[in-house]
Image (cartoon, rainbow, N blue to C red; front, side, top):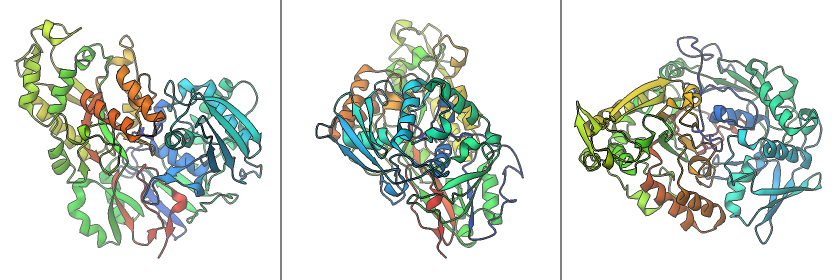
Length: 580
């Protein structure tokens, strides 16, 4: 969960909710009494917990960003809501982006737009965001050293509706627009800039954002540019949005009240669907054999595919297993032990596709390399065992153990057992079943794999970037990919995920050659650069690659439409309409 810089779902990613009404907080007591309201079911344990439209590492819930985008529109909004990922100018503050001939700067034109208090949206509101990010970049989840805002050397106001951003060198305009400028959200400087330096303003805004129960009442969150405002927002994750009557943008809300409903389990949400108290919900892939029962109730059942990858990060700095994870042969043995084809077919009931590298494979694109497509490490526990025995490991008591440390690799002591634990997100039978299947296949290789579960927000907070001496660095593997681990911006580069020091590089993977490939993909207009990156990480295995599920199997009441499901995993309530 975007999430997304804010794409964790990856994402980046999700959250926890409170048990209410047999696992659902706010479904059966919130009927959509008229066609002027909608009940939208949030994925299990995807509880919204952040309103500020600037992501931090612990708040990468995609739903947080979707809510924030409904309140404060982005400068340049990209989405797939028309069926193709593109700039959605109706939902953007900017109307044009003109790149200089040398591709070293861009001049942005703002629309004639106003904040909800009547003040005009100006270049100063964009500069306010720019100044906040510049001064606090290391706390911004979207930051990767060498990327924005480092790439932006100056911000020059031309007038209230035009400004120019100069870059440190020439960049691929496609990447700059889709991945960098799309992260900019104009903020109401007149209401939020209380004086003092940018660090203090950042601190004040983040402290206010921690007060979830105050979102609906704090005047800070009332000065908005988007189609909706917050009517209520509980710590359990139930959110009610109501149409912003002062909105003057291009995505006029078609439904005035949107109830976002959190669930602790997919079963609780499914029961709410059956009771008719959810208008837009989901079932798990394992429930597709019940599709007819939902269509008979007046629902349409349709997979929602995502522009995403799914994986388990290794913690390369873990004091017990980091030295093992740093050995490529060890990672190859693990990857050979993952039967992606069977997981996709059996566990996901055919709704997932195998993923062998850092570029999404669920949708066709020109970015995937032949190396990634061809699966460098096909399922074979025999191959996995051979890799380990050839490198000084032998099975003892059912677990591979390092008996020849000279062969095992640097930092691996004699007697080290190949035992690793994952902290996996809870709330999904499909995820639980996948982890059990992975556990079984790894056991055939002689790798002991134990599983702990927690709500996804807890998974994220307990598996951060760390150094080996920190107490928080005891985690070994992390999984937050029930609906896909990472949803990309339109251009699927790996700067946040796999570049050294990347803002969402949880396991501290570092490879200077890969860093160069990532940088090349952002500056070259040729797809060869990103294909080279695809091939390198398919082979080097910075994480355990896993099948890519659809974001969800959506179950929608007949008559609700007016949109396509956004493959970037955002929801856009302003686009929803009752059509019949």
